[in-house]
Length: 180
Image 1 (cartoon, rainbow, N blue to C red):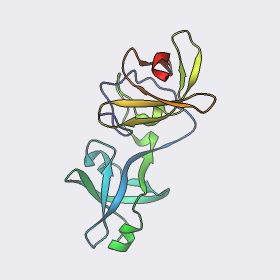
Image 2: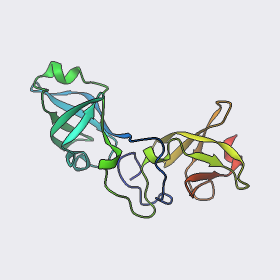
Image 3: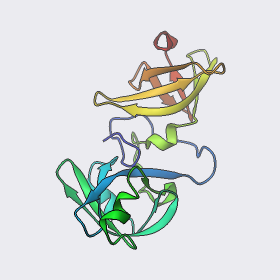
Image 4: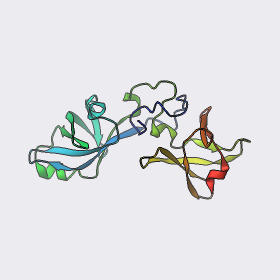
């Protein structure tokens, strides 16, 4: 598990600083309508629909809504939201993120992290020289990639693997050879 809403037991240390104020974490995106009665088809950013279903209140497109149900469906999930009662209402939410407040997520164990906690984190090399900050965390199936942006705005993707990028004391220590 290595997405923004579920713990990653293979990831680095979980002792992360709170970057910025209260944040929201995306658990899914609305892919479209499912049927004619307002049910939503979702692309999950969590491992299971149950991870989403444990939240009674979610933010959809920035607006707070009551989550009535969420369940697995094929490779994704379906969900019902209060006030979304027909296909047109469901389709109007296509592309919207379904988010929760970061504080409502379960606490993490050692070695676990949320992608949202890494975004904005400073990056240094082994000598302590500033390299930039994490601007995004991606995962295309082969493990997490950190997008590192330097002071000039240049971005590079770095594998989040031990010895290449290590989480230490609230910052990421990166082997600069991977910043080509």
